[in-house]
Image 1: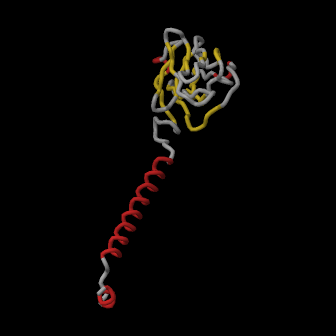
Image 2: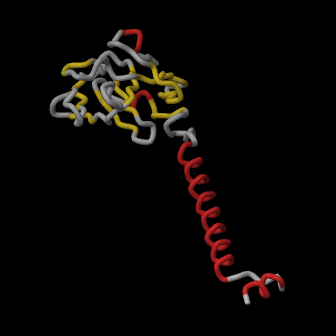
Image 3: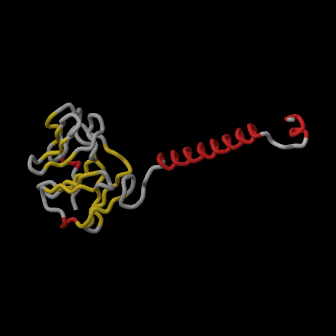
Length: 164
């Protein structure tokens, strides 16, 4: 009986199911591949990590202040002398996100208890170096942070501060 159906060009039930499963598998593979490509694509929109972030007017940041920019993945520090420093919020030990603790006046990594002072220098290891930074530019009294390139550093130096 099967031979008669094949001679007439009809598919068997088994062949039909094989084709259906193959087609669905191919569609699932395309969806996973597309989602993976979208996930790996860098974000570089205005105001987001990987691009230029306009932080605001110079006068809106008081000396000694720390302001978090979650979309830019950095903290903007205004030093007591008026200079600006943008620090990547990733710990230099294993890459955990550091938190600013106002009461202790420090950056703290919850993963392995590393801590950093206001200017990002290591106060408590195991972090091997100071927090990384981003370039800060002052344009027409506006603070702009370039998050497209991370600047590694061993410690703080006064020339790392940007003045307006």
